[in-house]
Image 1 (cartoon, rainbow, N blue to C red):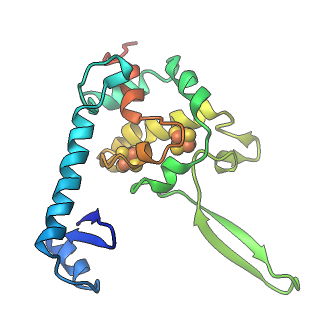
Image 2: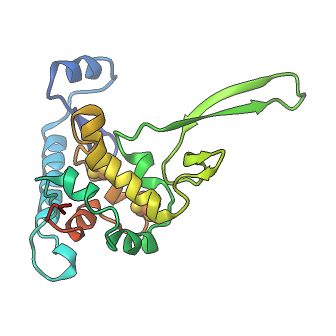
Length: 200
Ligand code: SF4
Ligand code: SF4
């Protein structure tokens, strides 16, 4: 299913039987031809913005793309690359990227007592690998620095997901880029690590 945000509502476009089953449960109206045209124009404007985007601020208009050849090995072979500390100087560890990512699934469990002290509710809530608590163990946090947390996020998403689930953890939606308050772009970070697979 594809959602296009119009001024007053969303245009839903269905591309599969499962999508059609979900859409059938949503109350709505048939779109007008004007609404469909507005959604198309917005999509084309976005495509143009992506295409014309200068890459790495050097003035070339090469658009945004992610080189996926040998990506798993390139990332896992570059765990000590200086780029990780460079990106950590910008990253606020705010967790926005993980909250908007459609494939991030980490949660934590909390026990919340009521004010009388008579009962405790065990609650599961969203958690992020960017928080200090996320990797906390009896010996302390496994990822104590922003550098180690950003590296954990990117290498899990684009590299070790292949080992875990047999596919990439990134669907290419770009939400993490849109919602990053300091403009960190995973396609730039991957490109900065280079295209070589380190040996040895
Ligand atoms: S572009 Fe990839 S990593 Fe970023 S939010 Fe979308 S699926 Fe997640
Ligand atoms: S949204 Fe940006 S600043 Fe926030 S944790 Fe993700 S990469 Fe870091």
